[in-house]
Image 1 (cartoon, rainbow, N blue to C red):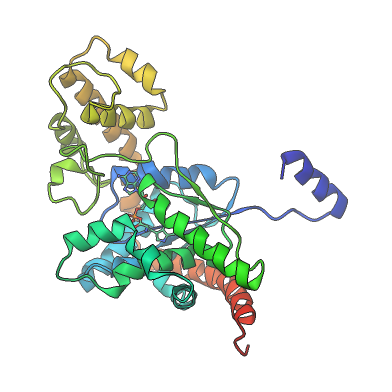
Image 2: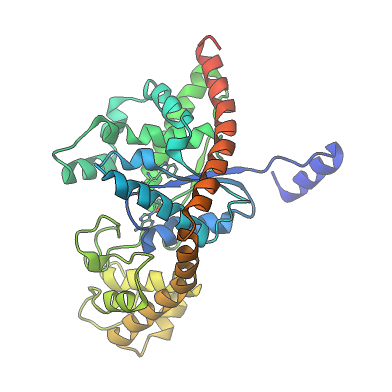
Length: 345
Ligand code: TYM
């Protein structure tokens, strides 16, 4: 709907037109990385002015890999505090823990019955994660994308802002929604992925062919949002580059291209502008500038995060309030699904 037609609807009916919805999630398996910030959370914040948003700490997804109970609880609260510190106002967005809204697991079971083994077996994340966790290839790891589809479809989300690595899962979600709607009518809204043009795939600083990830074995490859300015600058100084000493974005220069992407995201400048800025600089000066830009950018968020973590009671109360609102919305979809399938309701 265009802006004009929305205004007309409002005028004609006197009612406020319904805003489009966003759902996205992040696992509570560690401290968020610069990758999840640039690829996802920074866009959650940008989009939150225009959409009704639910942002979920997906702790049910986290347990597909074995977790220590104390760490899982700490990481969950930490993640919620990061989301708020990074600009998601809990008064304007629904922020909550997935495990506090049982409808996610319930719809996930139902959708399992509309998803094929072949589809799940093709998921690249399942293949990657099972290769890394050979001793724990559990059924949850396999059906993980079905739970993701349930997360999104429960809220009739129109848009799902994610990094590039989640594209395949959103495609599967659309396939499952389409299949369900074909059988039962228009039960689910068809969601679209929102993948940012720059920053959708931030790479590891040590192995720039791999995605930056909180589960990185080499800590120097990954910037955690909690890293101190010294640590951040040191990690950038050690970043793997190449030998031609030209700051240029190119396929055969994955390390430098990654640093340029990070610098562009941090400063809001275009990549070409960043290349020009460092045309006469060596890699040493460029890496120092990227490190400083990241450290400066993160400092205010880190302060806010520390303040939020000082009041766990308040954080838990925010999550409980979010879960209540999410559950109300989720129940509406679940009732529609049960009615359509033929359960006695
Ligand atoms: P997770 O927790 O791995 O990552 C959270 C979000 O951050 C993005 N991201 C990145 N983007 C760019 N570069 C990187 N290096 C990088 N690392 C992470 C991810 O793409 C993601 O958007 N399965 C999801 C969580 C989830 C979800 C959902 C997302 C569960 N249910 C429903 C959307 C909708 C995941 O594991 O994200």
